[in-house]
Image 1 (cartoon, rainbow, N blue to C red):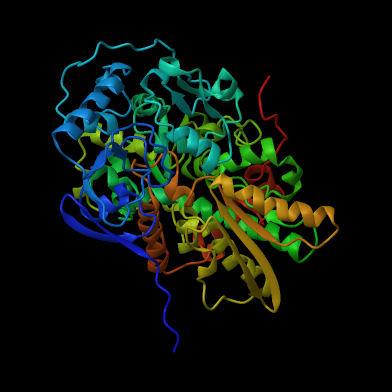
Image 2 (image 1 turned 60 degrees about the vertical axis):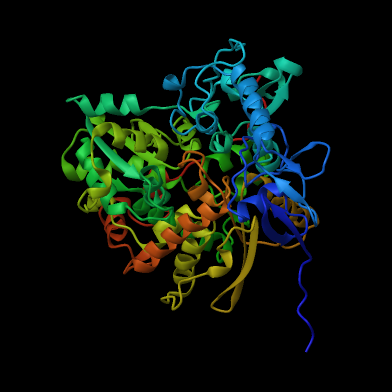
Length: 589
C-alpha cells in the first residue's frame, strides 16, 4: 500500500507557544491558530496580504528588524514575539498616524460601532490626538444612489481596490496621487456613477471603516410608515433570513424567517410578503424559457440567469454580445414589486397609487435596480419604492425598541408569501441553477423528480460545472460567482460560437458576489468563506425542512397563474414579469 503524501510543515514558537503549520503559512495565520491575535487593518481573509497598514509588526528573536506578520511566512525555528513594549509602542504610533488623517466624527459615521479602526483604537486606549490632525476636505460621492464614498475616512488599506480590481474584475476604484495626498477614488477621478462600477457593494463589505457605505434610506421608510395616506408593504429576500441574526449576536446561518414576519408587522407594515415566493415565480418563468430554448430551439443557448442586477449591469457594459442569451425574466425583487401593485391590490381592494413597496435585500445593487426604467414601471407605478439592505433593517429594528430575538413566530401574507425549498436556496451560489433544474426536469419529462438535490452545483468554488441527465438528455451547466470568475466561462462560449462549434454549456448561472446573495454587499460585516458556508447551510436546511421543494408545485404560484397571469411565458406574464437589456458604455460621457 502506497504511503499517503503529506504537505511539508514548519515548527516554530509564537510567544513561547509551540506551533506547527503548513509551509508557506504567514506568521499572522499561524498566530491565529495559536489563539494569538495580531492587529491588522489591511489584511482580510478574502484578500492577498499587502502589508499596507503596518499594524501587524512582530519580532523574530535575534532578528534585526520588525516583520510584517501578514506577508511574512513562518519559517522553521523562528521564535516570534507578537507583543512587547516596543512592538506595542510602534503599533500605537502607527495608529496615531492613521488617525491623524481621519475625521473624528464617529457619531456621524455609518460604521459607528462596527468600525475596525474604531475598535483597534479603543483596544489601544487612544482617546486623544497624539498627532495634529490633517484631514483633507473632500466631498463624498453619492452619485450612484446605492453606495456612498466618504473619501476623508479612507485609511488607504487598499482592500476596496483589491476587491474591485482582482476579485470582481470591475476596475472602478484605484489609488490616485502620492504620499500624504494618496487617496482612493474612481479611476480617472470621475464620479462613481460614471465609472465601470456595478454597485455590487463588495468594496463596502470589505472596507474596515466608513469610507464606503450603503446609501441609508431608513429615514424614507420611517416617513412612509408614518404617512397615513400610504399603505406600506414589505418583502424579504431569501438570504436575509439567515444573516439578520448576526446583527443581534447570533451565529451565521440562524434562520429567523418567522421572527422577521412578526418584527416587520410590529414596525407598521400593512402586509408582509416573502421574496422567496417570487423566486419560485422566477424559476417557473426561467425554466419555461430554458425548455423553449433547449427542447424547442426557440432562442440561443446557453441561457444565462439575470436575477442579479450587478451582474446584468456588468454584462451590459462588458459582455453585451450575450444579451440575446440572457433570460428576460425579471429578478424576484422586481416580480414581487409589480405583483404587489397589480395582483395584490386587486385582491385586497386597495388603490395601488397609495401603496409603498419596500424590499429588504442583501445587496446594494438592488437599490440601483430600482432605477432601471426598462423594468420598474410595469404596474403603471414605480413597482418597488425603496430598497433597504440587511444592515439597514437591523438598524431599524434596533431603533424601534422591538426585542427582536424574543418575538413570537409570525406568518407572511400568503397571497405573495408562500414559498418552496427551491425559492429559499436562491440566496446561495448555485441555488438558482438547482431550483431551475428541479422545475426544468418536470417540464421536460412531465415526471416528478425523485432526488431534488443537485449537489454538484453547490459550494464555494469560483466556477462549478456539471452535466445533468434529464430523461436521457445531457444538460451541461456552469455556475460562476464573483464577477472575476465569469469572463473565463463566457470566453469558452464565445470561442465555441466563433468557431461554429456547439456551446460548452446549455445553462449558466452568475452571481456577482462571492457566495451569491449570502455574501452580498449589504449583508452584516465580517464576511469570509466560513461565514458564507454557514449562511448557505442555513438556506439548505430551510430547503430540506420544506414540505414542497419545487417551485412549480407552489400552490400560491399555481393560483396566481390561474387567477391572474395565465400561463408561464404567456402574454400577461411577459408584460409584467419580463424585461430587456441594452448595451451600455463602460464609462459614461
